[in-house]
Length: 510
Image 1: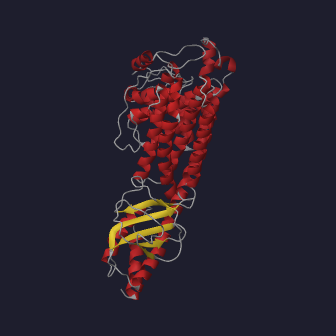
Image 2: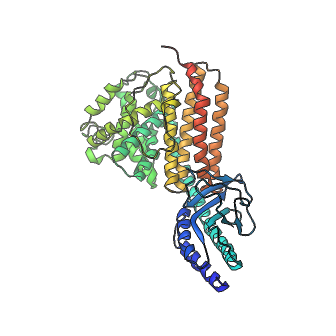
Image 3: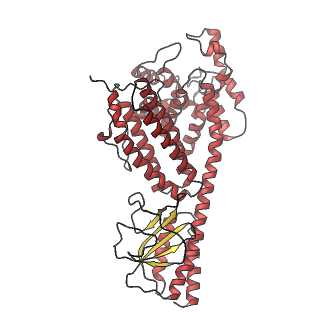
């Protein structure tokens, strides 16, 4: 390859790589490994790996071609970045690395990507590149560095976008929670009812965007209770006819509070106003019938009533589950949309699990759960098995759910759905971890567990690390997603086996 060929080859290579048109670095490596062998004199193998530096200065595998992905072959190195392109051998690898599926004697070109990291291109062991070929690799390194930097910047901007959305939705959720705290100090009703609703929506086949809208707006269903006097809202008995008429005004109060053209506010207003409407037109405040009632409000109606029936209220005890389920079924076609009731029944395994996870009362270590099995998923990265049981059914269910959230994150990362979805799952995980840890700590306090202080310390450290990973998405989303993925699996397994297993001391012999 002469100098003119080298310049032309780099130009064509960069043009081809930028034509990909997205930030999928695996696809960039795929295309690079297609193009390089066609160049005269370039003898690369069909293997490459991209290593980028995380906020701790550690190089993390974020993309590969012809090699195992990072979740199967975690590869990290603290090697220095900088300098020129270099040819490495097992004795002179810079950075020092080990690959399970590359022959030990395989040399590679190590292309420095400025301060971002390295691109390693494995080469024919017999190849002795000349000066022009080395210069080609150096120019290629500079071009790839630009593409990688662009990808990092674009993904970071997507994280910022989701943060702006979350700031707005958090404000909406807090307003809904504020109305709930007056007659439910734990706020768990809002969480349960919201998760019930999204489970039903999923069973109905609603698109993800609509389910996300429901998850944001469902907590606002009773925001109008802010305007109801305590003497009525907190009355420890059944309401009189006059008092019930006052209570019914919370739907219209919610309508007045939720005014605006924003799509979220409009959806929240529809739910707040219409979740007490009935399919047969006998509800309030407008007496709407059938499909006149907004769909999300119809879903929230079933979710709200089921949680109300199965929860303790100042004026009643909780209904037995079978009676509450039967009551919902009996209301199909009169009180409730038949399609929503059908979806409720399909979602029952998940709904019954949610009741245990987001409970108001303190966990009883001796409680035996009998929950219907959930559908199995084929893409589990962290697999639950009975050896991980701590002997407390409710805690085991919490741990299974943490595994599910970790597997959700794995699904997002492995399918390359981007930093926005990574940030969304991390936020959901952060919310749930706080629920789980506080429930565990309340149980330990109530039952006099001696290891409470150590558990609280470990919980606090985990929450801090989780927040740190979320912040790391702003520095380099491409490395942060792999860092948090491996940390979650390792921490959860170690904490359950070495710390939570001791909780079986709380279980009383039968």
